Length: 213
Image 1 (tube, rainbow, N blue to C red):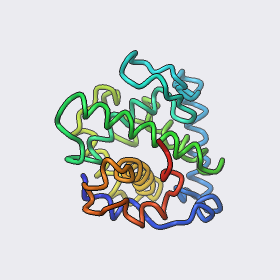
Image 2: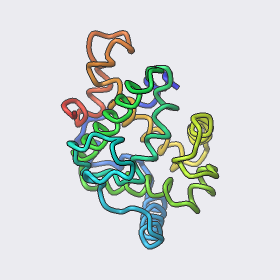
Image 3: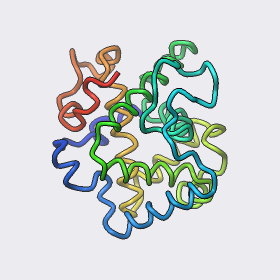
Image 4: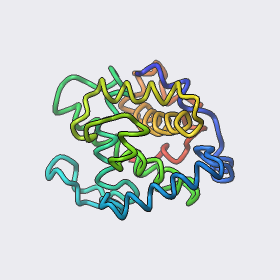
């Protein structure tokens, strides 16, 4: 799904993003996400940032401390990133793992610099996808994200991309936006977009990711 870049990264200043809803959920959507987050927390879903405590020892660089993403969020992005970035990832297993690892770390570092309102909405979105009941009912992903195939992740993203429900469509935009900027905005991947540096629209849209590493 590497062709998502121009569609999923929209130019917005950080001030506008903090002033307006990142997901543009509206009151009903915000209340729904808030309810899901509370329910997910009560059900035992991870609610605290992963820190250096990742559930697969040795899989991630323990020198990085996650300040926003939970253990469940990390697993979610491990499943979604190959579907979003597609051929941008190398097929060589060790390097591929490093690419995924460093991109998820940049996603965390970027979101950590968002305003509280947008962080709250993204937390609700991630909880919506991580909580088993809503993962099945609204994302239509039957297995855990840890066991989901790339094809399953692609099908989920396509359903939300084409959904007539604003919360789902905007959720798709949010997921692909933060992932694409974290991946293609890194200098190691600039050549994949055909530019000598990151696309201007990507840097302008989410400047929080510019110096994230």
